[in-house]
Length: 113
Length: 229
Image (tube, rainbow over all chains, first blue to last red):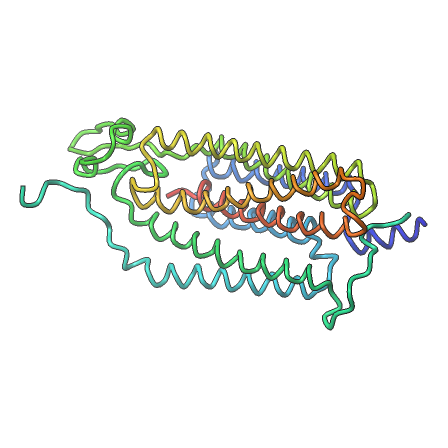
């Protein structure tokens, strides 16, 4: 029975205490993000640091909490391809419209008044 | 130990449960949905001329013509016909709601563990905890939206308001749907037959949805709140 349970854990995830430890690590990363954004002057390094920390949290949740690390590789492929497509859409939209956005000038008078 | 998740799925060519495959395809399509909304927000964020602004900004006096009294009150003169407008985002408060949502992911994964290992009391307890944390997150969002409304930001006040409320509003709607989904599973688990032999699958599916909502917020929190203008 023990080996069956071990086999199951190996296939489908971690032990409860390990999930709690991951939650603590995610909380610490969030505090570091907050500190980097509000209280520490990182200059130009701020945005890359925030993206890396965010990516670590993102990766931890999808691989360990959503069990992608333990599940069939097909799910990982589906999600990563979709994520790449979503990112491509984001980049394409920004590239298309970033320079073309018309800044709405504040109203300074009433035309024809 | 009998394990709920050990129920075999119908044989498929991919070797995976088709229902689970469908969940992942659905979550993949959600990546495109939120990617588009995020792009819209970022495009408009770069072209703001009328307060309220997400972060502190100096504007010409002409920018204050026609804005609401509440938005104008957040701007004070610094001379030379210029005004400094205070940013509207409250990062410390949103950090608390981010923590709440992160913890809900932990409780959700514990509920999944309980369901997959036939520990039904554990499953129900953590499912309830996840629901309560989800409701707490929604409470934070209602508080934030109400505060923004009082400070003159709404869907039609400027481009920031339109894109911000669309993006965070849709995310909040996903959280609300998740809370209802978890609530229906919790309610069903109290029936005499419980969630049936596929309890593990049902709770795992709900877990996938809930964790996805969490990872979307991880991205939104960084891009909307932590990265300065």
